[in-house]
Each structure stands twice: as structure tokens, then as C-alpha cells.
Length: 344
Image (cartoon, rainbow, N blue to C red):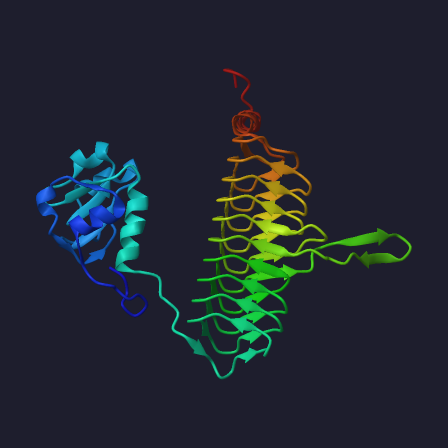
């Protein structure tokens, strides 16, 4: 049960309505009128709570739950305790996510322009936007409808933001075009000058003007304190639906495909391309000017220095195919313990 100091419960819902909204099947249709008042984890749920089981590891917890109803895969429904109604679904976690959004829908911005906000006269702001305290909006900025610009965000000259966006506190945006339904968490920095310079042993560094932009397509979410550099000439692009965790660094000219997952502390060097649906584990480091194929998976703390084909699974530093990495680890373990084959 959520803390009411921080979360607003929208109301209770019948199992019939929940099943319809999530595309689930009720194990007993006669319980369609049964009302659920909240969502809760399996181990703390009560008879008026809705829960879920997605991982077989927690079957024993499921067997002991007091939840009134639970999303579950069809093959696991037989483990339900008496009194728990099953809503069967091939992806229980997704069904739960949809249901949880019914109970706790995203907060809609209430139209407001704080007196302390500084908004250039040439900026264009759509209907029903909330502009919070200390926000700075520069010349010729365009912001769509139903956006929330949170406290002390800075949106510099010429930036364009689509509809239904949530721009977190203390974010900084420049040289960027942003699609619809984009969410930026606190401290995100978009469009800063890329790390580009010419080196001369005699005179030192000469900065190369970074003349590109950052293009963020619709339905992208970017975690707290992540930094995305603008392109040096080509644009830096973040594809539709991609999810980027906290503390990620993306260099200039990088191209991220659609629906990628990039976990915390990943670093992507300039001009690297990441294909659609790729997944990059925490603290992975990618060298510049390489290509990561569509659907590839890069394990945490891996160091990528070469191209990766579509669908490949890589691990280690330098990264190699995951099975090869595991074999290398096993060999090193034997060397460390002095074992050779079956003899010590």
C-alpha cells in the first residue's frame, strides 16, 4: 500500500474492469464485480489488494499470499491459494503496470506560470502547461500543450518541445528538438558542447565548434543527471521509446535506435550507433565510431571496442561473446587455484 503523503489513489476498480483494461482472463468470471482498492506486493497484500507474480522464483510467496486477486501466467495459476482470484496473462508484469496506472494515473499538469519564472516574450507555450518557480525560457523556444516544466529548468534559445512532456527540475536544454511524451528527470543536461578538439603538440588544444543538435524522439525517458552532447555536425539522436537510466553519458553524433534500454553509468563515445531494441548493462563503456546491432545485449561493466552484430550477447572487457567470456573466466579461476584439468 502506497504512502498517501506522496501518492494519490484514483479509486477502486472491479476485477471485470481490470481484466478488460489489461486483456487478462479471470479464473472465475463470477468474481467480475469484486472490487480491488489498491495494488500491493504479494507478501503484504490483503484481500482488497491486487498483486502479480511474474517470476517463478516467488511461487512460494504466491502460495502464501493474502491478495484478493493476482496477475499470473496461465501455467502458474494452479498455485494460487484459496481466496485469490487469478487474472491470467502471458505477461503479468505488463498487465500489472497497466492496472497500477489505473489506480495511480500520472499527474496532469495544472496550468500555471510562476511569478518567478523568466519567459522570453518570443517564446511560444501551448495550452495547459505548468511553468514552475525559477524556470528560465529563452528566445524563440516552442513548448507544446500539457507540458510540465519543473522548478529551475533552463530552456535555451530555439529549443522545441512537443506535447505532454515532463521536464524535471534543474534540467538544462539547448540545441535540442524534443518529441511528444518525453520525460526528463532532475539534472538532465541536453545539448551541451561535445567533447571535440584538435590537438597540436606545439599549441595545445583547439576547440572544434559543435554545430549539430540533439534530436529526442517521442516517448523517451531520460534518468537523473544524464548528459547528452549535441552533434559536432551530424545530430545526436535518441530513438523513439528508448529508456535511459540515471548518470549516463552520451557523446556527440551518437545514434541510439528505437526502444533501447541503457542502464545507469553507461558511457557511449562519439559517433557510435546503437541499433533498435539493444540493451546496455550498467557501467558498460562503448568506444567511438562503432556499431551495436539491433537487439544486441551488452552485459554490465563490459568494454566494447568493436562492432557487434544484430542479436549478439557480449560480456567482459574487452567484450567478447558471452559464452566465450564465461569460458575465459572459468580458465582464469582454474589457474588461480592451481588446477589443471582434473589434476591439482
